[in-house]
Image (tube, rainbow, N blue to C red):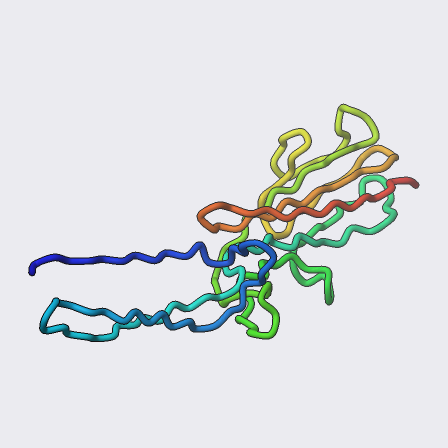
Length: 180
């Protein structure tokens, strides 16, 4: 009498144990309970847990377009969206849950942050005019511009980071050859 049994179940949603696959859906756990000795009272309690595949655990997909060639002193624009099918940056977790594909999104509204940087330039003095004025790093907006001033190959990297509790990142890199 007066005893209480509590049970907590907190799954790490999206985790896979062993070789099994997490299947999205609503799962009901039912527990039969018996109380007393001589006058046994039986009841059943249940709860439902929604499992949504890899909800919140998909890396952002970083993508952008950079022309293969450009003339010196030409202002180039890089952007995360509006590049065409398959060429935009996005977070798969923001897509609507598709029960036929457990690794697709789950309707979250995660915000992405961006970091644009040069991974290589024609020489270490970084002959370009970045928006931010910082060598090697030139912006955090979804649309940025830079103006290469010296002939050579410039490699640009985009890192997209989501705002999940443990932030995930996706990156992409493109190169442009600057010549007259």
